[in-house]
Length: 242
Image (cartoon, rainbow, N blue to C red):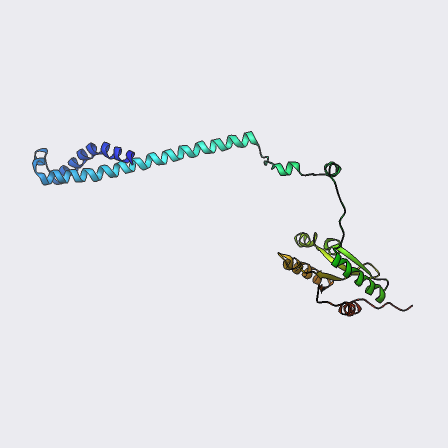
């Protein structure tokens, strides 16, 4: 604001001279005619307008030159930084501390403590024992496995699709005499449908369906032992008589 005011004050005398000359040239007026008030006012007005336009043009040119100079300085500074720093990407501290090979992992494991935890909780273990007994009774060559990783029983040519299921697990898996996965039994406890559990189950269910593996649910407090037996008898192949 102050700069603009100073520019206007600087341009005023110059503008008056240009305005007077312009009026005189256009109307064939001499300097003596400037005693007439209307001509003096016209000269002042034209001079003011013309001087303002000239000053704005000069200010725009100075601003453009200043921007070009600053842009050149920034580009030169960035070029120097690239030369000094090189193409290397800064490595976060978390990556520097993460074990990257077996030797690093071993060092981390050696200085840590581990404890065991049950593979199944009490409710899941009860269903597992019941299911295992029924399956063996239907066909002794079939087996029940617990907490099986989908990455171990499913394959996909699409690496993105495989990564979606690789770390997911199923509660109980029925395999046939050739250890081929045939059916999955998911135990839905009281707190199962919390957070994103439903979405995770949908991913598992769709992947298993596409692979031809059956998906079934046992719901706590709803599925009775007799219903579980009826389900298993439908799923397990009858043994071939020799």
